[in-house]
Length: 171
Image (cartoon, rainbow, N blue to C red; front, side, top):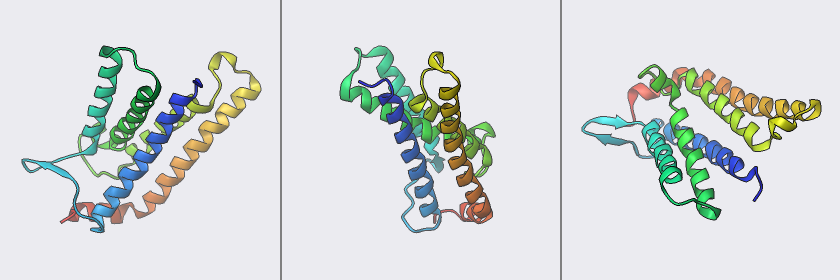
């Protein structure tokens, strides 16, 4: 198995889960799809909680189950990426203990985590770096960071409307 296979699975699942979470929230807020949020006793359970449970599950399996390999390890890598995305997608909310879902801190966290995952997935091991490899590692991180930064700038332009929709709620 390639040394880069698992980091690439984590990165791919991270990007898909982040994009899916943002799209679903936007569609719910626009009332384009039904309210899929989980409410327990009148409390909205944010998806960062699902991410925490997924990360806890993956950690427990890797620590306490017999050694995992093959497709099971690929599945755990994918679940780990999804857990990271769901948790860091609401980073601003757990950093500030509330506030709008559309906080800049969440986009910044996603950018940093995505860039680090891209580095793990595509950059050569640090001990083999020389100028050419270091250059390409920096390029990879810069491209991923630029993608997420551009996404955050695009969403920042529509943030006031997103926050108004958030206040109105999905009902």
